[in-house]
Length: 373
Image 1 (tube, rainbow, N blue to C red):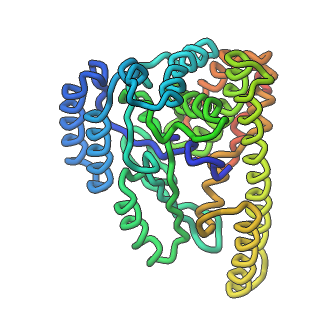
Image 2 (tube, helix red, strand yellow):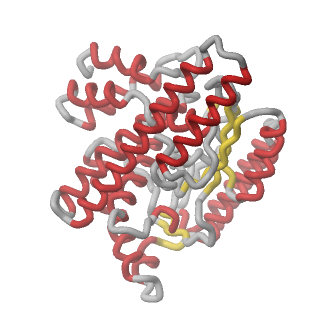
């Protein structure tokens, strides 16, 4: 799901999921909720992560009960005009994505107004003197290096024992997530930013999460998220060019935000490389901890981070920002055709990976050599 450590909370949320796809649209939410509840009960009998799965199911139930059709949301005169105008764009964004190879789904036909600043809070953990993430395994999604909680209090309670055990732990907000096509994802109020970049950001989120419903390689989080980030970033630019023009205020604001994001990504990358080199050096653990604290303090000031940064923060940045050069090269090899690009990548869904792939570029290179076939 809707996480470079993302420049905005809209990118990269850990996926929530269910084992049952509703047979009817989410606007008939009670029937869909009943199916979800039945599926949840079946999962609970065989899964050790009972608390996590239970809150994921309850969170989905709450979404289903709160959802209204996109048409009703757009037509509600009590809602701010700006919000209604942005929601009116969602069907256009979906059709644009489908023309470029993304799978047509029933997602984003409903709207949910949340009474909280994030859709989920994402908890990740990493060893303090090595970039090795803690992982969790679940049905459907496989092994993942993060878990998303619908309630901040639950996320903090889950994070506390990890911190006590000595892990570097990060708890961050995310404005969107994907159920990977198993449920009908709604447009969330947290997907709408307050500035002029809002249309570009909304397009990015919808296209990013739609990629997850189009192509998902089980257990390969870094590959899945880096690919979704690449597709969301690139297609959002094209959408703005087509919809409002390359010199529009919306495109200008979005590109300005992208530039800030890229500058932040460069700083995060440099800190990661510096710390990775430190952790593999012959320095003592005490020396490593002291230098780590200095590097992270400088990084926090440089990027204006509002919360403490640690290894978990940096390793999540890598999850969402790997293999960009190779993905761009594959797109070029496919003649700039997004359907051909996605068709080439589908080979990875059938590939048997023995472990989560740390080097996304290395996974993409054989596809480039194959000539986009």
